[in-house]
Length: 521
Image 1 (cartoon, helix red, strand yellow):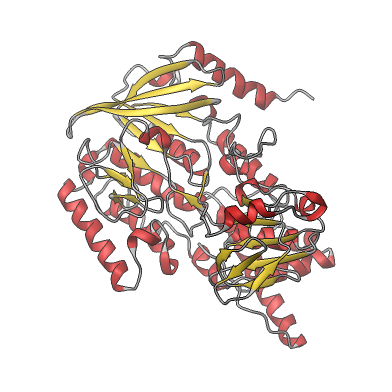
Image 2: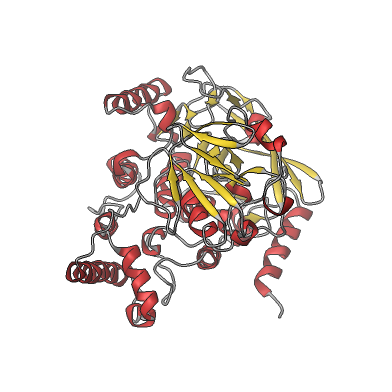
């Protein structure tokens, strides 16, 4: 069947490629006073693009906008790989075929843009991919997006007060072009570069022998995990208690001979007959030894659900970001210690001394958030400050704010250079409201007397039985009844509340007690 949407995307990208200086839609070129480049068309990039396009309607605001996306379509990590890859080549996404959301989809939405009626409460990844594509179409974002273009480097040419970003881009055939922009927004995600710990003795363990069916022993990061059937009749150690570690252990255990789950702490256990172990201490030629002294023999594969390093290669290539693993030392530039990018105002604006404080922004760095709403709050903030840099205080004042924020984290027992951009203690909602309220307080946007975060979103973390409740709905085949008539955000919120209460009543009647579920935003 002819795919008109893909044809349209390809046509737009082709036209933009053939006319390198003709990137923004023509109706916006006559009175351009600022140029902005966005990198990445996942949830963060689409949110940023929407906020910038909305800003076009403001009086005396004219922007030349382009978004570069290295992949074939929008959607970020929710867009599957075009073809399988194998180590050491990194896949474009950590997405695996059996992936379902681990948070209820109403909480994952851009404000006022719910998922279509009939969407399961915890759907497979295809629903989320389609959601992002629908969002780009609904808000007419596609004309600004140049697909199959990779940003190779971005260099600031100028002074701390004024200048431009020279951005070097390559298309899928390797042809390079360069353009200059006033503002750069980085929105390309942070699940690309695996964090791979090295354990004592692992090399000798890998060399020492073969695993099940004569296959060589292996240690792989979860970014390469795709099919649990690959581990049939094997003994597997899965490391990490995050979503990828739990999912991998829960899926592999259905096929493997034995699965160990090595974790620091485990609030949400993996499902199935998984044996929980503490952290790995070291390897011997024949075994894996854990910190409690216990050992696992005959292990065929170790899967590392150990997260990702915070890297932005196109800014590292030009020297705009220094890579200093585990560093806690701030200098005049921007540094990543692989967990934390600093110094940034509100996890967004670079406070490097090389350029103006609104010249370089990052969308989507916060962790332990529902991405779409948090990305959109950040994007509104960035769009307004790009249009009016005076909304920010001086660099010195902003650095003092960063110091105060880091000191506050330390006073609560957190190392800011280790927790990085995590929204600790459920602070994501207050963070989003603070960004928008600060714009209202300065008159940048109208003060409607409303909070950015809707009340129903704040209620959802208190619903502790949604996953179990929806699983029972699926087991009973009652999905259609529960989803009937659910279209608006208010209707989704009501359904979740009813589901939580329904499950609570059943568990009480049956005398069932479960560990507390964790819904992290």
